[in-house]
Picture (cartoon, rainbow, N blue to C red):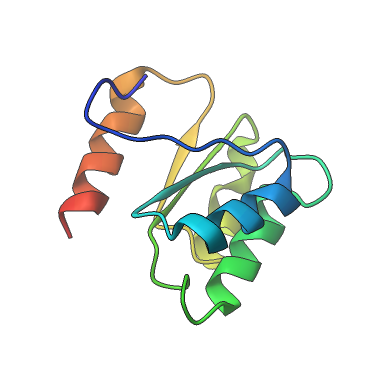
Length: 99
């Protein structure tokens, strides 16, 4: 969806997302709210408590439009509502990676 030029690592659930983030030290994380085991907001909270990952930009994507304020107050750097056009995700990703 974002095109070439990015390396992606996927996780099957929230717990694996944390494991992957700790192992890979990503430049940016895209999190869906609806994840098994730990939801995206719980993963975000853990990331923000982790001294080595707390500054990694996080984009939350979800079909729950009412989760916007909760995601931002939890430390998300950007919020994208599903369904979305690829540019709705690409723009914030590029902007956050330029910081």
